[in-house]
Amino acid sequence: MKKLTLVVCDVQPDVVKKIPNSKQFVDLVDVAVRAARNSRTTTAVDIVHTMIRFPESYDCIPVSHPKLGILRKLQMKNSPINWFTSPDLSIPAAEEDPKEIVVSRTTYLPHANDTKLLEALNYENQEALEDRDFIVIGYGPTVQAACHILGDVIGTPNVAILKECVQDENMERCKAFLDHGLMFKEEVVSLVDFIESMDLLQERFYDLPSSQKEKAQTLQKYVCDCDRGGHISLYMFYLLRDHGYVKWPRQPWFQDLTRNGKQYWCPVGRRSIDLCDEPKFGSSTRFFLSGREWLDEKDKLHELVPELMPPTFHSLDEAQKYSDTILDSTGSRPFIWFLKKVNQNGGRAVEVRHDLPPQALESDEQLQAHVPRPLLFPKPSLSDGKERPHKCHVKTYQWIGCTRDPVTDAISWQLYMHDLYYLATADKPFDPNDLTDQVQITTMRTHRLYNNHPWRIQWGLEEKIRERIETVLRRAIEGGKLQCNLPSTEENGTTKGKYALQFEVNSSDWMLNEDGNMFLIECNGIPVLYVPEIKQSLITRG
Image (cartoon, rainbow, N blue to C red; front, side, top):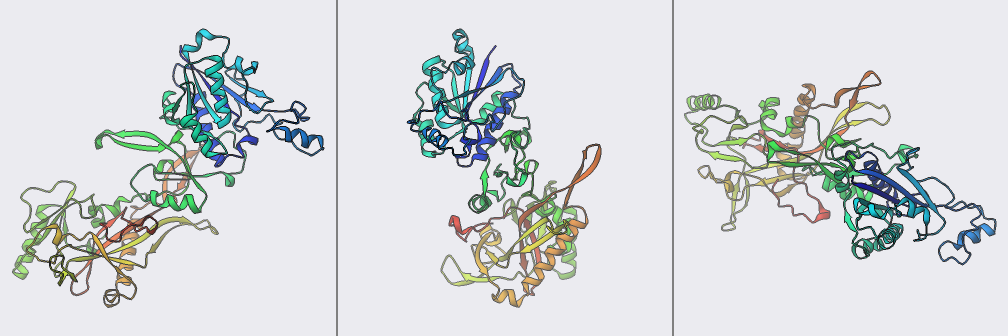
């Protein structure tokens, strides 16, 4: 049977407190220890904790010791000190488990003549070393010393180090050790690989380390980017820099075979953390609205507010009836149609046509008539520089969230609209006979519409847009489409509802006609955002 020994080096309060991001370090080590304790493989796992521990007299320390002599000197002066005298570990050893032991020492680093440590590392059973793997984690200098004992004294060939679970107060020294200081063919592997080797990738670890004794408000705040495609990568810059968050690593969660094997991710240990773009693993505020598809998908948005959008149809028969009506009443038909995929925004998956398609619409398609007599924006033509009217739409951004009042504890929906609007314009001048994307599709943000812009004043854009966005949200909330409360859960035999604090930055595209009438074209759940810190150009599609 294959055997494994996890060696946890000096993960104790008096050592850990001098390490940068010490709480994250302890939490990651805790995940590794839990994985070893709960292995689902046939591997027999032992855990050895090493630690420094002195008697209160410190009489075992030479006064001349370059690292520890100061402790003896202070004690001799009757100074009230207790460093390295406690038996407590930051991650306590499992009680009454013979496979998990603690080996203390009175030297700064473990030595080759430490008989207790050698015995714990199975030094006497040389024949079994080929069948035993060693994983070493913890305080960097002690990890290095333990690797030297395993390689040079015990002579084991199978030693690995978990990269995320080795830290040092000197980050450059730790990196140099992992990159260049491995002398006995030690292998550096990831914590995720170790969890997978214990057959625990699909297990959810406890949300908090068992060793954590502090109150909840003192815990380290974590944020994890699980690559769901939202804005968390932009927020993370500010969360890490200004708000005390630390980045938590991720691991594979599952693959969706119905979407070409798309890989989904979750926080390492499948633990809930403070902020995560994968809603299942966020313990506080969610980065996505529950029911967001009712804003993001065009067919559902049209179901909510059909009167705010251009004439939109979900079947050829409906579109044909509308076309015939226009023909009978005006003698002309709407000669531009947009065939759109309902779940793709930003000008993607749009076909511009003069006539209706010959085949029936797919379930994820809709037809939308062109806004009659669109309001055009004059700008220089790319071909000759002369100012010509271009097709355009107004883009607005809004923050939509479900929040808790800190005073009354009441849960409510909130809407904040950004006061700067953008104008997205087509690449080429408008020509109703030209169906190319450069003429008919307006996805490029090219101009800012400040509060004093003539269009905002002349057409009353601010009041019209706010009124319409409020209508969209009111219908979605009152109709139960946007949900502030999640399904009830059983807790201690009673049913308890759980509120979901959540938010999303959403954008909306508005098109005007020559009379100033406004039409909602679509909402975008994950719009392109302008971030000065990353030197992003204003002229972007989105």
